[in-house]
Amino acid sequence: MTGTSTALLTDHYELTMLAAALADGTAERECVFETFARRLPSGRRYGVVGGTARVMDAISRFTFGEAELAQLSGVLDQATLDWLADYRFTGDVDGYAEGELYFPGSPLFTVRGTFAEGVVLETLVLSILNHDSAIVSAGARMVSAANGRPIIEMGGRRTHEEAAVASARAAYLAGFATTSNLEAKRRYGIPTAGTCAHAFTLLHDSEHAAFTAQVEALGTDTTLLVDTYDITQGIETAIEVAGTGLGAIRIDSGDVGVLARQARQQLDSLGARNTRIVVSGDLDEYAIAALRAEPVDAYGVGTSLVTGSGSPTAGMVYKLVEVDGRPVAKRSSHKESKAGRKAALRRHKPTGTALEEVVYVVGAAVEEEPHDRQLQVPLLRGGQPAGELPSLEESRQRVRDGLVSLPWEGLKLSQGEPAIPTVYVEK
Image (tube, rainbow, N blue to C red):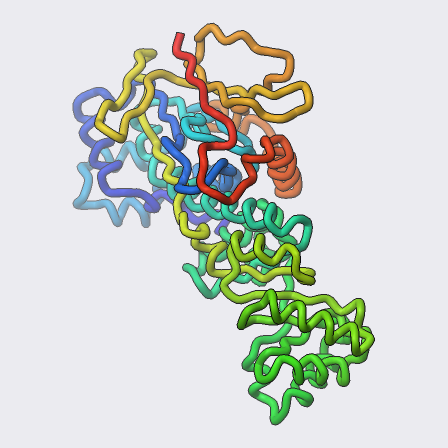
């Protein structure tokens, strides 16, 4: 998608606000917009920031060429169209690095510039951060539940085609081992995996013929799908065809815990002690956790991952918190925001365990302690990159480090308070 304008990936009202502000002279007021989540989705103890690199790319392509302006002709006045024709974001952005954990109130993405420059970015920023953060947050829970066993992302058929690519990236960021999505490999270099579906077995006159064809094409290290018909017979046929050096079998239906146990016993009895067992079929973090004691070597996760495992959005908002240096805040019931530009640090024990998220108004008297860590990093200065963004691999490591830093109860899948409290300092 490099080079394609992102300017129309926005809401109509952002441009009508722009037009009105240009007309009454308020468009050039210096403003601060903050992206944050008022609360975590139900049952979640932490969130993980995803999509930062995608937002940076999208902002760089937020420009109005002839095609975009033609779409807006008749919708906006000529003065606004002329202003948009010259639009390039020239402000500053600070935010949490991709892969960083976050909690309620964390100032995840701070945009500083004129009202006109900042207001038009709201939908673009939120659509990416809300989606990717929801997916990576769900994925991180699954990775924790898997306890070191690899997970394959395979949800491309359960969501929009572009969301599938973004989800594959977010899953890899969370710690998934591979994806089935080939476009994700092309765009982001994510390793891919995949073998055969039930259709391939049904295509052949027998399961034996299907397995033979697959092994001849892919070698004995392949994964044979053994539950098209009778799973016990399927495993026997798989070893008959591939030998005891077969790489893996996959079970995609039924009570996969019981079936995995029976499969392990059967494989061992046939001498295939090193043949791995991969399970799939509507798995989520709870199902993965329930399988921890079973002889499962890897998981395939689809629908629950690409839908955020019940929380398809991170619930983030993009709010104006400062105008010309003056703190402003929305006071509506249940949709309140805290005034003023904010930063944050995370307080830790000497052992590295996180204690609390300290969110403070810039300029407030906050005494840093020896094991505190500032969370916001510069992303854009004067509209230009403030530095090279971390690689996807570096961001994966940040997720791992963040999860290790949580108190042990913060990794629980049960209902409860956020893993660490958020403390506000306003003066």
